[in-house]
Amino acid sequence: MGKNWLESNTFHHSKFADIGNLVKAKQEKSLIISLCLPTLNEEKTIAKEIVIMKSELMDRHKLLDEIIVIDSGSSDKTREIADHYGADVYLSDDILPNLEPYKGKGENLWKALFIAKGDIIVYLDTDIKNIHHRFAYALIGPLLLQEGIKYTKAFYDRPIAEGANGIRPTGGGRVTELVIRPLFALFFPELTQIVQPLSGEYAGYRSLFEKLLFPIGYGIETSMIIEIYKNWGLDVIAQVDLDRRVHRNQSTKSLGKMSFAILQRFLARISDYGMIQLKTELYDQMKQFVHLPQVYQQEIYAFQKQERPPMITIPEYREKFINR
Image (cartoon, rainbow, N blue to C red; front, side):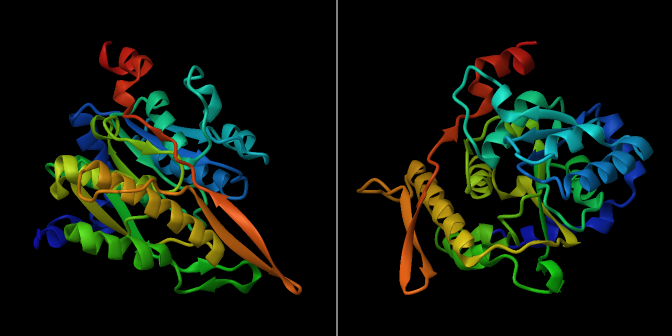
């Protein structure tokens, strides 16, 4: 096990608080940096996220070169709000329209590679209630200042917002501790050093992202870590402590769906690498139950099997970024 990785590749966001130094490093390396925000019905939080990132990291400091929103088809005013506050807004279905459109976070992240101009791409979730520009600059910092780092991952304390009841100081990260960390311990013990493998905030070089598979639904973060580890090793990964991230609470049932999809993707990925042999096809449905008066109502959750190939294999992408 890489016993020194946790010490050498784990950072606190304060190490990168000198944003002027980051801008200088970016300019010296002649790099373009894009921020990608995948959205679906985030009208309550998207404005604040864009305003903070744009004012601090584009207007005050020239660290970001663009903020793009890739939307899955919001039924609220997410796209209108994002456009009003200065983001470049795209409907996912309109990108690479010759391909069958899918719905899911992984689809938005994948299509962002085709839209974004950056050599470095930062992906941030858009439901963060305590958004701060450190969520972006601290992930960019190791990519600019630490030799050999190609991918950065956020971790933090995870209190849960409970509506009118305020903030519960603990309770986040249940799927990580009950599903992902035990799986990593069994198959990839080195990866147990990653504090929050399911965090939705990460950044990396285009040259890495374009070579990865992108599962459409839940499982994108786990799949990404495994592929990066298997192809480039643990040393290209860094993790950054962002202190605290407040997010909305999810029900146990919702976390069950997430766990099911992550398990599906994890088993499929390690099967691809020949680490296990699946002698039966994995089922793609899970039954859950709702307790109604005097009856249990059955609900069936269907897993999204779709997965996008590495973007570098798409002819339109190669024409735009590789063969230019």
